[in-house]
Image (cartoon, rainbow, N blue to C red; front, side):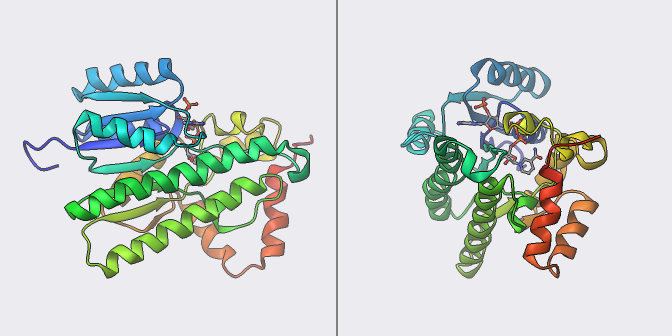
Length: 269
Ligand SMILES: NC(=O)c1ccc[n+]([C@@H]2O[C@H](COP(=O)([O-])OP(=O)(O)OC[C@H]3O[C@@H](n4cnc5c(N)ncnc54)[C@H](OP(=O)(O)O)[C@@H]3O)[C@@H](O)[C@H]2O)c1
């Protein structure tokens, strides 16, 4: 970071998992942070930890991003703080396990609002400011799930396909404009966070084989931080995730879909 110049990052999903791990990376590099999530107690404890370890300023916005107008409310609150956002991290997201037709529709409408609508709206609001300053970076949380269909986690996979596609398209628009602003899509594989409990996936094979399949969020965040600063378009953490994503390009979607479903089935001894 440039000497003497305070930089600010806005991180949604600040209260746990990958968002919290990313906040630690930014704080370690001297960034002041605006954290967004719903759980105030968890945000406050992370904020005081980052402040005492790194001396950075942390402001908090308690917000449910699955609600109409939430992204604009966050934008307006950030404007009131009076600091330009140098980096936007759209991390907040959830999944929902189960057979599509058996899950109440409200769960999907909540998930789509959080994973797609608020992410798109926040990107739209902050990107305009970044373009007019010709400076700034955006990190969107996609997933390896964005590259293939995910039976039993169908809507989640579809939302991540949207995030990957949107991010890549914006990166190209910016490149064609010769803009200094960059958009990076972080596409982790299974990562050891609260995601699986929240998505009702405790009994699934992916959680059962957690020690073999999952990366720690700190490792994901470390690689993502570097990729973001290098302006990479897509970043897939971990060799296994990179290799399996590459191989899947030549496998028919119907086969991919069936293989993926095995991970999401309930584990049987
Ligand atoms: N874990 C994985 O295997 C994995 C893999 C690929 C991609 N990802 C993506 O990584 C991102 C972070 O997930 P994670 O794994 O770190 O899971 P996590 O530990 O459950 O974190 C999710 C974060 O999103 C916030 N959030 C959830 N619902 C919200 C809402 N309605 N309004 C505002 N904030 C909300 C949570 O905060 P509050 O509950 O306090 O609101 C929390 O900070 C997600 O986009 C996820 O899809 C995860």
